Length: 248
Image 1: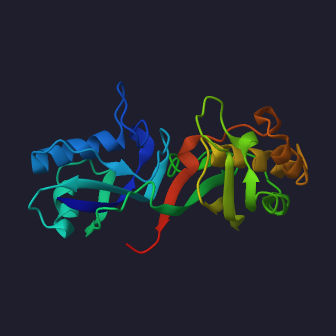
Image 2: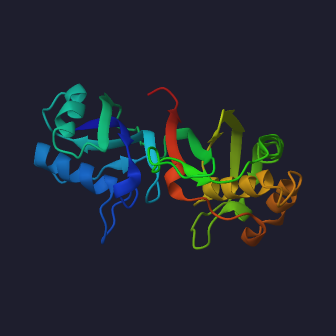
């Protein structure tokens, strides 16, 4: 038995997210069906975490166990011949059997992309959240200081989530502007609640519009109430950039 680790890039536009669904196509399903064809085995692939419908990934990590004789470094090439071009395996390797893509992860980094101009884009429309407003990026960046560190992020979790704890640690968070009209929210943490990043982005945008002040972020965080935070930004602006692990 071998444990194979995959580095995966995908455009989430046409998928119901990472996790297998009963009534919609997911990235996990596509990969498991390809692996079944390759190996003749019924394989369950473990992802580092779920990405929602429409969310993208440049650095998703997954692992699976197999008795296949395919060389570990050749799985990337073999799988890519069987899957749609909007999913690519960038790298494959054998790792120790105790590696688990989800439970072994120590941090994740995401980026959320915003385009601020009067008209929505034709090219890049699946990757940028279009806002036809000028945003106060300085105020948005000022508000990021309140979420860095270990906090209870209950106010930034969508209803219906089943997390045992809503305490998370954010290691870095900042907005970067690329003139004339592109904004990127970069955030790294030990984990994120359901829709947490998208709700944070929606709240930062309200700050950028001067609908609330940057100091309100502290009050929203401490309140623990979802209805005090901003709207949930749409999924297509979000991308999983990197998953971090200790050496295996």
